[in-house]
Length: 342
Ligand code: SF4
Image 1 (cartoon, rainbow, N blue to C red):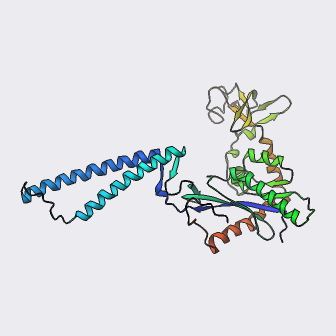
Image 2 (image 1 turned 135 degrees about the vertical axis):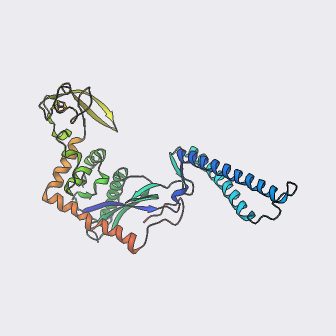
Image 3 (image 1 turned 90 degrees about the vertical axis):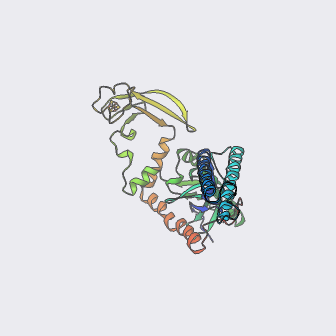
């Protein structure tokens, strides 16, 4: 039924059955407590004022509230205040117990998710779809707030499902699986992981490359971006646009990868000081151990075949997600704390 040679991965934010206003962090708890304190003070002040006015009207002996017209309104306000106190207590308790920075007290697993211009409390549904029939070959629902961490689990699940499928159908197809995803899934560490998976051939641009291909400007257009510096691999130093040397200083671990640090000692007298760097210690370059993988991916995506393969996702995974959202109207979970499979 399916060709299972080209798989596009994409995600869709799905709203949790929980209102965003019930999401709390420490800052909001403090702010809400202050607001509540102010509201109580204002309420008491108003009540005192009303008492004085009633004393004047009925005399101090009468309580004046025997048959108040707004008793219902008063009760409502007091009950609402009690509810807020209770909710804030609950939020603080749950926040502390979870160890998270933010928590939605209706659905504790839901996270704030960026969905276009909106921020909603929800989940990210991941799908891997084959290019021929738009069959979903792998799926997941996570509360991760971005797609980068979801790529490798999705690739592994896809490979596993396809291995099973091939076994069941006695397929001897040895062709590498082409994995196509947009720049939200690109991370150097992901590219390094994918290099290890010999059955996979990935087509995933980085943010800057994707922006450039859409005709947008990026920081790489600056004449002082690190890509404008020339690396001498043999002697391990960079040459800057002013022709000065940036020497290798050391290696260190940064965001789970090794980076080599190079610095220039001649920046203070340079005519470009202030544009290239404002650091009095001189310009430095941090070169990741996986930087070559980004260049390799760019190279692959710039070929006619690379462009054609990457273009597939537009006519496979995007319509499939559109179908789920528009035709099947699946935009929101109807239960709390239950992971539904697509
Ligand atoms: S500021 Fe330093 S690194 Fe930048 S161009 Fe001048 S000498 Fe080169």
